[in-house]
Length: 328
Image (cartoon, rainbow, N blue to C red; front, side):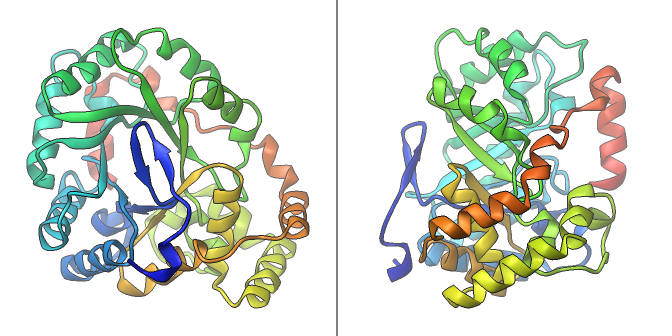
């Protein structure tokens, strides 16, 4: 294991991990532009070889492509000590379908059981969410998953769905969280702590803008308000640059480290091996109190940004899935 990664670990449920995860939407979705399968697989293998042991994917990322890439990386590296997480699309989460989709994901990943199986988005309002949660719980009894989680639930939605559980706890909620999307700090962190749950953060680098990207060169950046918020905030960009220079790390490492120190497990997408460096760097230093205060002050306005809500909840699942297939 890399010397950088020999220190602190945290837990998701009963699984101990390094406090940063490998994201794979970038590796499998056409929204991110071109990258070869071999590039993505090599990047994942290098990250795992560096000591990272949490990887997150989803059936909706390239409609199975990301899971296949992760599966190949795990075949080359091994999966015994790796927490492998994937998700069922909210539009696929219908009574009677959860087990089928989990089994398909498990086969693509090539694992005996999925470490963390998550409900990707709240399903449509026409779906009985409790029945979906019961089917998620059944995956543990069937040996298809070790733990279950949800994604993109705000605190009030989460409180309601937690009442559905009968036998197993929901261990995590994966939401957008970054320097330019701080809505989870309003109530969600508090709710998660109350229930012993972990916040997994996606969008940690605001599609690369917090790592210094400013050019809109793919569909993912074009459609993301967080990318524009970060790219145009010159005060924030300057603060990140100065802090990065002081610690001798990349800008991306500063944004990742901020998220860790706020209490989240940030996910950082990988497409190429050079992207691994920032994840490793983020675990090798700490932000000083005044640096955290400076970043918090500059980004205070983003506490009021709207939490991710799913407008498609009013559209029948089958139509939502058809729309997603056109882009993802």
